[in-house]
Image (cartoon, rainbow, N blue to C red; front, side, top):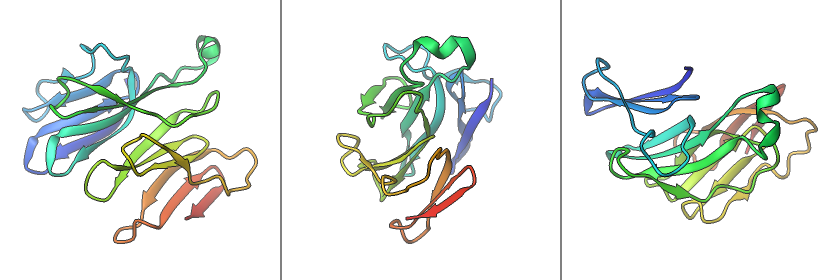
Amino acid sequence: GLVRKVLVNPNNQDSIYAAANNGGLWFTEDGGDHWECKTDNTALLIGGVSDFIIDPNNFNNLILCSRVRAGGEIMKFMDRYDLGIFETSDGGLTWSSIPSPNTELLEYIIKIDRLGEGFDELLILTNKRLYKSTNHGTNWTDITSSINESNLVLRDFEIKPNDENKIYLAGTNFLYIT
C-alpha cells in the first residue's frame, strides 16, 4: 500500500516506523529487513494511518491518526472517513483512543503535530479545517473558523520554528498564515 510517512529513531537508525494509508503502522528494529504491523492485533478499529507523531524523548510514545480512505460506491455508507486518534506508550503493544474533533460528513484527518514538548498541545489538520487542543484532545478549537473561503480544501501545515504561534497552512489555491 501507499506509505504516508516514515520516521527513523535518531538514537538508533535501525529502529523505524512507517505509516501505510490502508495498512496500519509498521515497525522494524533491524533497519528494514523485517517489519511488524503494530496496529493489527488491537481491539480498537485502527485502519490505515494518515499521519503519526513520536515523542522526541521516547520513541515508544506515539500518537496516530487512523482512517479508511476509499472512493466511489464503497464509502457511501459511512458518515466520515476518519476512524480516530490513538496513542501508545509502549511502542504499539497497546493503544488507547484520544477524543477527536467533531468533524463534518466526509471530513477526514490528514496530519497531526504537537506544540511544545509533550503531547498536551496538539494540532489536527483535516481536509476542511485546522483544529487545536491544549488538553490532549479533551477539547478542540477550530483555528480556521475565521477563514472565509468557499470550497476550501486543505493539504498541509507547518509550524514556524522558534515561533509556535505562527502556522503556515496550505490548500488548493490557498496559503494562510495564522
